[in-house]
Amino acid sequence: MLYSSLKLFNLNQPILIFGRDGQIGKSLQEYFNHLKVPVIFLGRLDCDLSDELAIKKILNHYSPSIIINAAAYTEVDKAESEIQLAFAVNAKAPEVMARYIANVPHGILVHYSTDYVFGDTKKTAYFETDSTGPIEKLSIYGQSKLAGEKAVEEVFNFGQDSRYASAQDNLSRYFILRTSWVYGDGGNFILTMLRLAAEKDQLRVVCDQLGVPTSAKWLAEIGVQIANSKSESGIYHAVPDGKTSWYELAIFIIEVAASVGRRVKVNEKNIFPIPAIDYPLPAKRPYNSSINNSKLKRALSKLEFSRQYPHWQEQVEDYVRHHVIFNIKN
Ligand SMILES: NC(=O)c1ccc[n+]([C@@H]2O[C@H](COP(=O)([O-])OP(=O)(O)OC[C@H]3O[C@@H](n4cnc5c(N)ncnc54)[C@H](OP(=O)(O)O)[C@@H]3O)[C@@H](O)[C@H]2O)c1
Image (cartoon, rainbow, N blue to C red; front, side, top):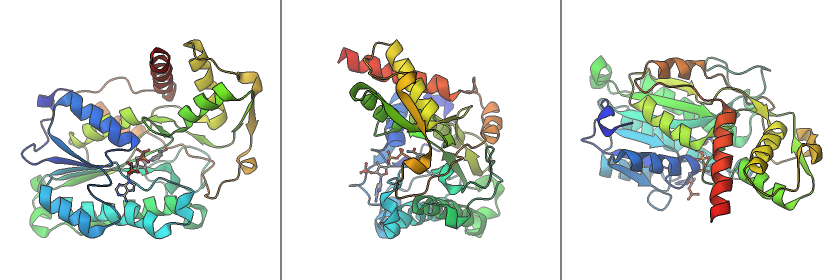
């Protein structure tokens, strides 16, 4: 996308991005680098998101008109014992960002969220209109992310300054992009499988949890594109097409890796499916993590840049190929 095509952005005020060093944050850095747009990226040392005052100070200092929040407390199991911290980063911090942006004319908040807000109430893919929870079926991480979504929505629905809320043209907007099974530059399932496939003679992988692997690079692009569109505020499910289980995904990763020259000790015959119950972890995970992307597709189809919507297999294949080839060369 060309710099000039970011025409809906008010570039007189900076774009502020939280979560610089995370998977999506790093992809956003790459994306904006390529666009040559002035952006301020903030990491944990620049602004601790568990500190409400620190966030307010940063917002007042930079006066951004666009905020992309790619930061989150993402340690799903640790969150079970760090409840306060998880809620501070995943619920209070986005609320503070929303309160600020809601009263900036034409302001935009892009906030990433998760499929973990759903607690296995359906066997098919969830729509944005489906009920979340129930709370008792969610992990602490899921609860804290859900509280963040609700806080953002509440601020925009009820907390906008009447001077701006009455002038439709001035209205600021928010986009909550719910996604799942993210992989990029950071610890993730694909890299774990590639490492294990080189070390072990056999693997056991969970086969009864379903979801959609999603590229951080693509999520960065979607975040910018939706912000630079006339799309309505709201929640959007941001995942590619298709769905899979961890087990099928592991086989796919290892097949692609082997096809581009990675030495692996396992193949389909010695990767064994196991139920999630045989791989106990401190935090609950949904069995059904699949979310329906048709709302996002409709929004993107109205944009100039609109192109073929990806399938998860294309993105994973691309990622594995690049990773393996890069590591063979280096
Ligand atoms: N990963 C997934 O599978 C997945 C699935 C669904 C949704 N999501 C959502 O997607 C978004 C991004 O995920 P990701 O995979 O890119 O996450 P990630 O790689 O774990 O990055 C999260 C970032 O948040 C930062 N952070 C955490 N606590 C902070 C604090 N107190 N103050 C400031 N920064 C803090 C971390 O800083 P440090 O680098 O200093 O640790 C890290 O850079 C999140 O909203 C997440 O909930 C992720």
